Image (cartoon, rainbow, N blue to C red; front, top):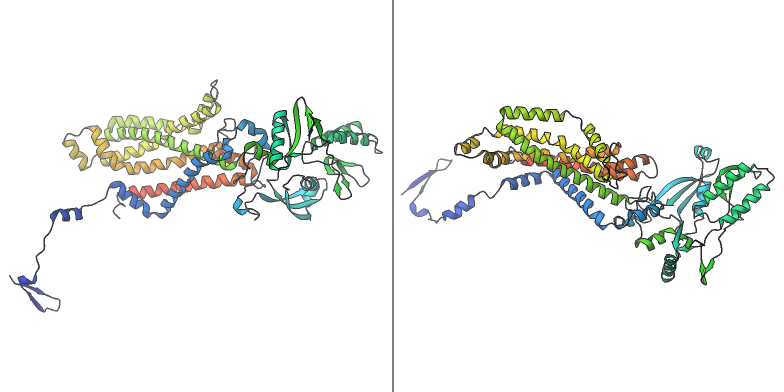
Length: 544
C-alpha cells in the first residue's frame, strides 16, 4: 500500500510498504513502563526536599535532638553525685567557656578581661598554685568611678584565666588523707600544699593594734580582726595582710586588706608540718580529721577522675552549662512532643466527630470547646501547680510537671479539633465519599479510610507547629518565675534563661547567651520545618 506525505515546502514524497520495518511490542513491558511508581508520602518527601530552608531546619532540629540525648549520657558531669558536688561545685563557680581548639587564643579559651582593685590584684598575683590566674597584666589604668567605689585603690586591667581557681581548704579522714598522699607520691603532683598559720598572726596583729599610738577603740579592733579572719578563709591568701592605711600609718578602711611586703616580696605565714605516726602532715589534725590546703584543680581531677572543661561555662553553683542545657532541651522537647501527641489524638477524635456528624452534635461539642478555650491557660497552670505542690509526699519535680502537663492538655487540643472539623466538612460531601457510602461503607471506614487520609496533611502540619508553641510557653513561664524548677532538681530552657538573666552586661553573659541561641534555633527551625511540611502536604502543590 502506498502512502503520500507532504513536507512544509509542498514537495511530495512517496513511501511504499517495504520502506517500513515491522517490530514486536511486549505489552507487559509497555504497561510497566507507563506505570506511576510513586506514592503520597514519596511525593510529599520530594516536595519537602525541594524546600532548602525547611530541609536545613530539619537537619538543625535533628542535631539539637541528638545533642539533647547524647550529651547527658556522654558528659562526665552528669555522672557526679549532685549532693557530693554541692560543696565542690561552689569552688568552680562562673568558669568561662573553654574549647581546647582555641587554647591560648584569647577567644573561647576560659580567659576574660577584667578591671580589678589593688586587693584583688595582689590576691591573684600571689597564688602559689601551678596555674596562675593573671595571664596578662595590662598595668594600672585610670577609672575614677571604680576608684571612688574601691576606697581610692589603684585599678588594674588584667586578663584572667577562670580555670585557675587556686587553693582550697578541705577536711579528710585519716584513710582518705593517706590515699591522697600516696597518689601525690606516685604521680608527682603537688596537690597537698603548705598550711597557713594565720591564727597566730591575727593574734599578733591584735596586740599591735592594742599597743598602737592611734588609740583604736575596742570595737574598732574587734571589727578589724573579724574582717581579717574572713579574709583568711580564702586559701589563696598565704601571707600577712594589713588593712588599707593612710599615709601616717593609721587604718583608713578595715574592710580592705593588702599584703604586707618585705622589700618586694610578701611575707608568707606557712605553718610547720605536724607529725602523726612518724609521718609529716601538712595541715592541722582535729578530732580525727585532717584539715589541709590543696591545689583545687588537680584535687578535683583526683577525686572525680577527670579534668573539668566547661565548653559552655559554669554557673554560680559550678554546674556545667552544656550538660544542663542538654537536659533542659531534652525536657522541653519531650514535654512539647508528648503534649502535642496527646492533643493531636484528642483533637482528631473530637474534630472528626464534630465534622462528620454535624448538626446538633457539632453544635453541642463546639459550645463545650468554646467554654474551655475561654479559660486563661495561666490561671489553669497556677491552680494545678498549687494543687499538686500541696499534696503531701509528692516530689516537687513531679508536681511541677503534672501541673504543666494537665494545663497544656486541657485546652491544647481545641486547635487540632477545629482544623480536623473543617477538613471533614470539606471532604465528607465529595463524590468519592458519597460513592463509598452508596456501596455500603460504614461510618468508621468513611472516616478512617477516605476522609482522614486526605485531611491528614493539614492536620499534621498544624500539630507540628504546636511543639514550638508548647516549648515557648513553658520557657516563658519558667523565665518569668511563674513555674519554678529550682527546688525540683529539673532543668528547662526557660529556667536557664531565668538564671542567666542577671548576667547580662557582666563577665558572665555566656549564661544567657547559649540558652538564648538554642531557643532561637528551636523556634526558627520548627517554623521553617512546619512551613515545609505545609507546602509538601498541600494537594495543590504536590503536582508542581
